[in-house]
Image (cartoon, rainbow, N blue to C red; front, side, top):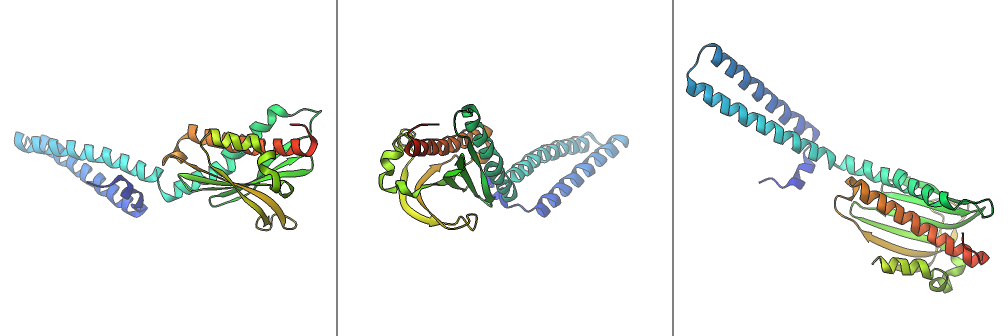
Length: 243
């Protein structure tokens, strides 16, 4: 019996060849059955051709499902959906998480995509004119790793400053750990290298995560919420007030 996962590696050329072969056999069987009826062939021959036609129709239907499965789970589709999640789903969630909190009396919060390529997305958070956080995400189908890059001056007391966010991770059974102070230029995206406090978070995902709209939305909202929570606590440390 064929393992379903092996169907992911059927090439487009092979799919086309098999589809053409099934189509040709199906057409030939229909023509043969029509000729048999026209020439009043024996009932045994007509029955045999009818059974063969049923078998070919069933095979064609099954093959159609196989092609759909292979196409939906191809490397190209996985890459496309990964890019869509990083560039669209997360960005929409970032936009949603800030909109209810906008007020003329409070500093403007801007959460946006800084850069994305392959399976990595980098997002930044600004409050007024200051960058308060950067999130670096790498999505590998059923696992997402996120490094939150926060102001380095809070490295010595990060557990106190970011207590609520870290407790939120713990309550969700998500492990977060500090990588301490690290210097980054974010692949040349910053004018000069900066030192950030790194908080590393890793989540495991279902194997069909990329094809589950509800799961994608939930994760995007979680990432946006995490980033907003970090900048909220940074704002409180800087000004004594929350957003």
